[in-house]
Image (tube, rainbow over all chains, first blue to last red; front, side, top):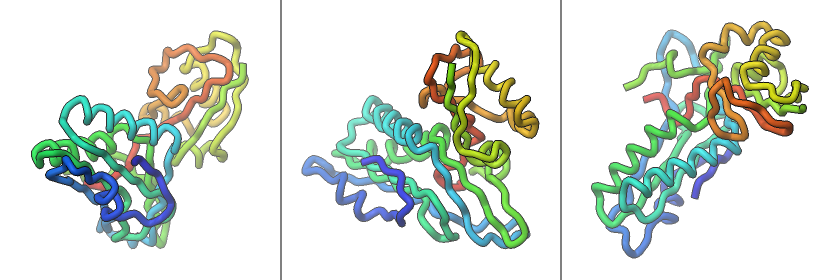
Length: 140
Length: 84
């Protein structure tokens, strides 16, 4: 259940898809496009993916998770194309017998996704545009 | 030998297309492909220090030897997921 789509994404379908009778927990993450107030008015964001490699990398991340924790199912969806502030850009749902593994796997999934999955975003303002890289936005 | 080169984001905007074919001598390495692209597209030079590269959808170091039909991608710093 790894997907790159230009359609709106949400958590509910992913949660339904990963639940198993053995699952005592489903941990989820939703990444949302936020407004970075640096004095510029953002009109929209444009997400672009190297689709074939992005899916491969998402699959590798899922394999890494299975080697580290006992989980049932893993679902990840990333949206590409034009997104507005407030839209969901990435959604992850991971089911497991116990909550500790589900939650740990979910944190790992988004951290790894941001490191290795070839997806880029561009901010388009009223007076210009810029590809956002790791060095050009705040990281917490 | 023909090497397929995929370009994305800032690289695509400099090169002007998302995909091009580069003809290189047999036995060429990734660094030689990069040099060729830098000559052809001088504005790439400013980016090269921050680029990663993939060969056939696996991240690769610049000394990787290329084979006919390989797919290389120039990968600017990724920004998928969300901001924080």
